Length: 379
Image (cartoon, rainbow, N blue to C red; front, side, top):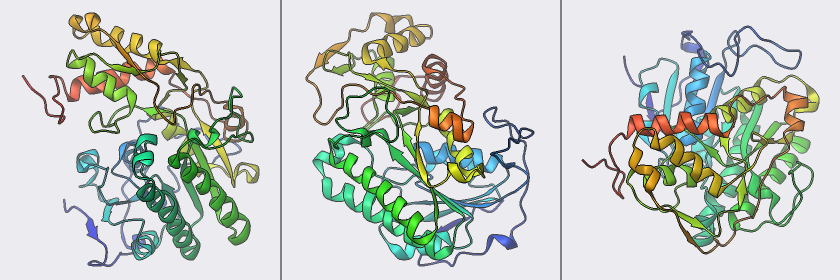
């Protein structure tokens, strides 16, 4: 089966209306094909043309798989600066999938990618607080200028809805717990500033141009396909890699900082609900996207050692080391998900332990021999 990969500026974007869609079995338990609430339309019986920016990344690739499984036509726009081709390899032969190599910092790329789209899931961004502190200019170019380009392109293409990845970093130095969407503090990093600016732009575009926008403030997402390598690897895959290699994980601080760790399938669930809702009160706003519970880093490592030790008993004896607190980190994070429950019927299926078990099994199955610092397995 031919693979549809476009390099924008070299190939024109064909209309999806000329492509027949093929329904495949939707096995994701998070969204039932039969369940249609008063706030939600069927995701399967109404195939849509959907653009996922950053679709070769961790969250974007998992979301793209779910959308393809639901019978939609999916286009991924990615420049592969952090995304990986291996994340979407299984999608490449699918007749409803298309890959565009392009950069959201280029408005022409954005305009070509959004042509004929019904919905946009904007996942493309440069994540990581430390990265933004090291290079605030590039972080701003991608996260702010790129975001604005996508909004302009969405406005001009008259897409139905623009759903974007916001961030819990927006809460900044606010000490209130749990975090509610209407109460934020001062940003503590360049990254946090960019994500808050995204929310401001989305609000202005919805009020000024009538674009339906929904922002999802992600809280420490983890799960399959999350990269354990590199200087800015997220804490869970990094800890898993270190423990699998019998290396001592480094905790920043005393380990009592806490986070609302959120399994990837809960995040996919929220994105699909944000697309499906027909409730006017649920649109043009932001939602916490989390499980609604907090766990300390010490507890997290305890769970990881427990689950990994079932696969390799030697991991139980790996020692934990502590270092200084990291600049820009907030001490505690806990989301209120009441707004999402009320307006989107959100009911997360995976708590931390359940999600960690799935994630650990995925890493073990996909890298079931120790990994070196470059991410290659060693025997």
